Amino acid sequence: SEWIKFETVNGYKEHVNPGYLFSRKTVDMNKELAFVEWKDARNSFIDIDGNEYIDCIGGRGIYNVGHRHPKVLQTVMNQLQKQAMHTHDLLDPYRAILAKTLAEITPGDLKYVFFTNSGGEAVESAIKLARKATNRHTFISTTAGYHGVSLGSLAATGKAFYRKPFLPFAQNFRHALFGDVDMLYKLLKSLEIVGEEAAGVIIEPIQGNAGVRMPPDNYLQEVRQLCDEFGALLILDEVQTGMGRTGKMFYAEHENVTPDILCLAKALGGGIMPMGAIVASEKVYESFMEEPYRHEHTFGGNTLACVAAIATIHVLIEERLPERAAVIGEYMLKELRAIAARYPKLVQEIRGKGLFIGVEFFDSVVGFEVSKGLFDNKILVEGTVGDVKTFRIEPPLTIEQEQVDRVIQTFDLVLSQVQRKY
Ligand code: PLP
Image (spheres, rainbow, N blue to C red):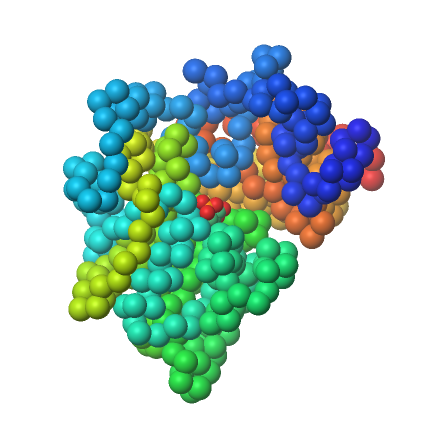
């Protein structure tokens, strides 16, 4: 089809999702920029021809409070009218208020905050902080995990696809199989024996980019225990699972675990401002105070991003969006699984927590056809290509019941159409 041809010609084969392809295939810059976030469309995109697409990918996890949430938008606009000043050399009250708010809502004794502009920068900051706090330099992350693409965060990332073209870079990273606690133990033990004790263990509680891969029961608790046993810091990357996505404000709450450093970004800025942060415990903070180091991002913690994040947190709490994600997510998961059971040759597994759902196909071509079918029916999800056989469903947590039902019905319809071809 025209889609596939264009995809191949332009070498986008491995990256595309149908929405991206759609805009590309027109080869028209006006069309390229043609998806707009319409004023009152909190959970959808509208193209310049007026077609409305239910957003089931949520900007890859930035739209937890919906598109253009009026409170977040108004807060940022008001602030812009008054002041957009930003300098690290003066204390910005909004930076302080946000730091205090994060200290209050994050688990346990996490209370020291450093602001970044992105998730990758948050992970970089956590890595550097853990090195200083422990005086160690080796890290363990997980296979297939995703932590960003800057060189430090890429070293933690566990997919050859991202890593291989840039090897060698930081060599002080090892990767344990995700979910394999025995392997993690063995790695920590062997590092101890050779005198390269781990500074930290970096994990996503649910591997998002890898296809919403779920951890085994009590995984975080067991990793926490191992970290304590070996004196390594637990760095939890909640860049995607945080801010209510999985049915609690942070995934760590599902397991009652407090990491030493928590990484946040994506939805923290309300889908309006780029924003990231790390939140660390007092123990971590105290441990480098004797030998402080310089680490900063010029725009990290700027006023506009801070007010956006403060407003976002208020909205998440006021509108009980984590709770909403839990209820709607459970319903969606149940319904999607019931449908998938009728197509046992197409769908391998549907898994997730809250409104973070992965649909895995036996074959990525089938997955691609399904995502394209959904797109043709005005529902935007990711595509699946190559060895990526799973697409994520992560809509705004504000998605309406009626929209959820349309997604579910359309999923059924599209699967029945695709099944006829195979
Ligand atoms: N960590 C996780 C778990 C992510 O999902 C991502 C992005 O997808 C990142 C880190 C990197 O964030 P950013 O793209 O903002 O650098």
